[in-house]
Amino acid sequence: MYLCRKSMLIKSKRICLLFIFVMAIFTFSRADESGVPLIGITSDFEADEKDSVGSANTQMSYVNAILESGGLPLLIPPIRGEDAVDTFCSSLDGLLLIGGLDVWPSAYGEKAHTLVDSLPARRFQFEQRLIKKWLSQTDKPLLGICLGCQFTNVICGGTLVQDIPSQVFNALRHQQSGGVFHGVNLIAGTRLQQIFGQDQLVVNSSHHQAVKKVGKDLTIAAQSADGVIEALELPGDRFVLLVQWHPERLEEQHRKMIFGAFIHACQLATEVERLKESAKSKAGK
Image (cartoon, rainbow, N blue to C red; front, side):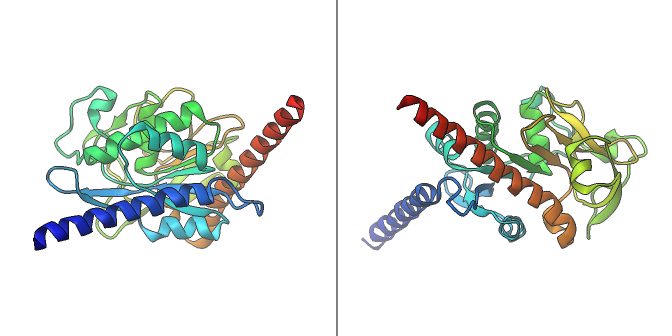
């Protein structure tokens, strides 16, 4: 009897949390009149053996970076089913893809290197659907960090260096205990170079994988001295910026440059969409 009641209580809590989550989506959906954009932040996922029960979480550094730049963060758990992905794509003003473990090599047609530490199936499958739909069915801004950079590149048809130390000759240290910093060269004329107004940056580094073949429509925005690709972007008006480092962990000035540009792009994109909807409404009268 106790176990039965405990099971019912757990189920009730899950239903309650799901209800709160769904209500949050519709309560805060789209930028409000003050221009505060709703930013979805993907989450890490720790699963049990059956991948059915687990926890979704994200580091507060991502949340704080969105808040201090003028956005409203919303944690996105890896929910099964297309309906949730459709709701996120229609309701959010911007998408932040956080770091994590490795993209499945099968997603870009390769066998796994012995040092690959793959994402949990639930997170991989959810973010695969989310990124595909976000890129193909919306014009909204996207900021990808570390794994977010790599995963988006794969979705666009690119491939990855599965292990930098063993696959890149004379590579810099891109990952080590305690953290590591190195320089990156920004490509002239790119959005990233325009954001910072300079040709070089010193960034943190905590990755053992990197972009190899660049995905369709993306372009290189930064590289390190060893040739490793450190940033990609989508040329043109739409804001899609993918960085290999972790700007949310860097000093305030660097952090605000990237996240400020992202939030500003979300505000502009939302305003453009509002104007289009207003024009359609007037034309229909």
